[in-house]
Image (cartoon, rainbow, N blue to C red; front, side):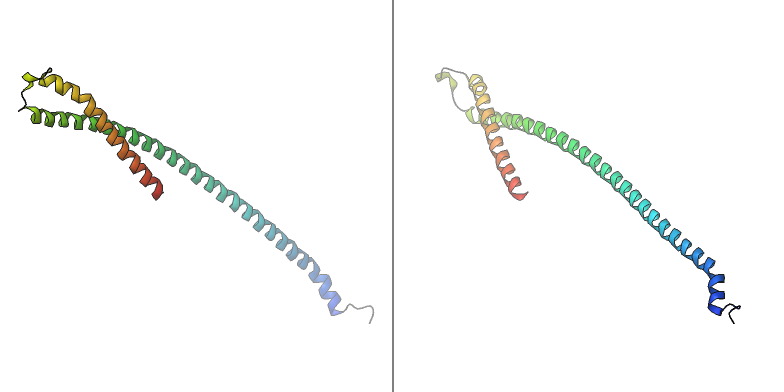
Length: 142
């Protein structure tokens, strides 16, 4: 029966185009999946870049606020030194009230005026030492 086709030849000839179509579709599907994965990676990278830019901007604004807060703290510290000096001079004035300044070469007001810069420098020096110790402690903690 050489003139007749076998079942295998018949099925092979009839199904071969369908098999090739299925294989081509499978290759296209794999290619599409690869492209979708690449697009997903690009979108993810773009999102991460956006988040990093936002984080950078947030850190910059936090740095600006921290610098402004530090300047404000230094200003308040300076004003505190002046206020402490004012109160100490007031206490000193109360302490020297009973003293009779007629026997001395200077009056009470001149004595207090001469004490102001000394007290001011002393308070400033103490504040500087305290600030230095606090910074040393903060460096140990960090």
